[in-house]
Length: 305
Image 1 (cartoon, helix red, strand yellow):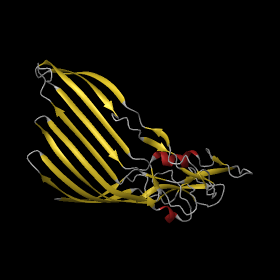
Image 2: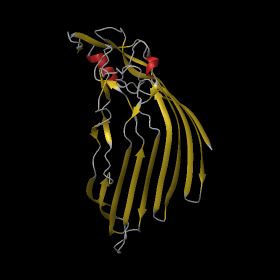
Image 3: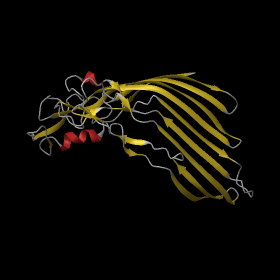
Image 4: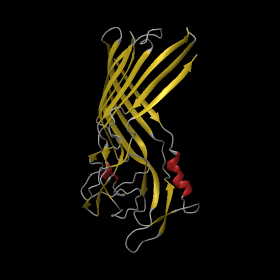
């Protein structure tokens, strides 16, 4: 049995601070355009006078038990809270926007993992892990704006980082040590991952509430933040390799083939978050904008000595 507690402090994201340095109204600025008449005015960024360091608090407890001489099963429960996370907010609540870089967001994670592990013996090793949990926050990244700059509590919802379930499995199987037989020195290493979809915001296509938020944070009336999910992901990668003995204990030649996304599953990397245009439902919502690679094969040859 084991348990742990820790406080973990993080550095400031330099990309977050760059806006206050580059667009302070003197060195540079942005222009906000809105409405039929088009309001053209300078929008500026500055860092809040109260700028504490980001940190997290973690509580964990779990156990590990041996099933036999080579195999163990492990279960761990974790509770993690994040404090002073980054966000951008139109502090003046008027136009043109006066953006304030703040450390006022927070997050909560509650979940657990169970894993089965066999160490390498008789040419076989594997690891299977299943995780389940939930993550909530009111800003998932430093460029995220609130729906209402005067009421940040409206944004508390499932985080963009939330993934309710994830399964990962990997293994290494070796037929035998390198030698003269045709099957000697052949190894196979598969890796499989599958995960449920991540939360997806439902946005209007423009800043209809005139909060100055960019990226857009406006949602259809009555809709909470991140109400739906992107598609789940599935991936299987496999490596098949043969080792030729060049000199006993000194040199080996290895050749093989690697296959990524062997199942050729279409995994969305980005999907459209735009749910409506002035409350008119869009059919393109949740459709893929960018996908991860289709099935790929690559050959390898390497010499070790």
